[in-house]
Length: 257
Image 1 (cartoon, rainbow, N blue to C red):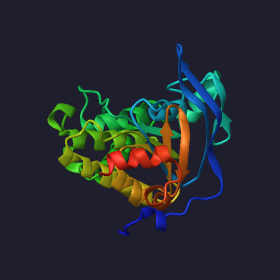
Image 2: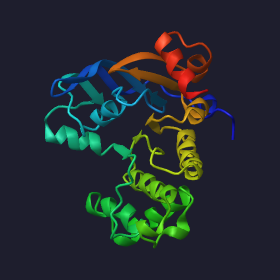
Image 3: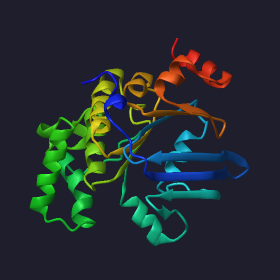
Image 4: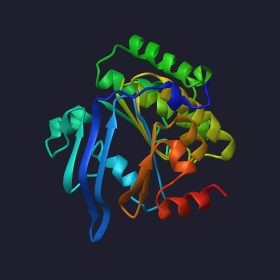
């Protein structure tokens, strides 16, 4: 594998996510303060910044897990409004992986993956199981298919969660700090799966993460959030080697020491 997935993976010029002047308040707290961000088909974007900078809130607005109060967010030509049909249409194109794995404890790994395709896409169990096993192979744990979440390590559970998100054949994958709840030795196995996804042509990814080695190797673009605004964005080489803003330099110096 090349040192930089971003070098081998070309994003298209077609916009798939467009956020314009996005604002979000939690009561009096102004969490997002006019976010403008465009993501193209096939692009891998890493969002980074300190805790409380608004990055996780922003990624959650993209599939309406959080409602923005001002501005517009358009996903693959569909604007996110209060229209339930629009929200459902957008969510059908997005897979999301969280910090916590959110697996159903009473279902096996395979059953966790096949539940949505059977219920939403009306797959027959045999077809859903075939898809589920392929996805477990893709994330490197086919032998864990019939184990329950409590029998799996954190890294294995997160890989099941990624496979579950992929089962709906999304155009976009959102990752909200997917390794932050993992022990250090399990982080690399999840990042390896994400790196493999990033290499696929056509998969658009937005990752909120503190894993700077992953960002350097995989991202087409990095976006630095601070206090609810985008302070700086650019390709990894520029962000790491010649950051333009003092706030970016200061943050990187704290996490790269």
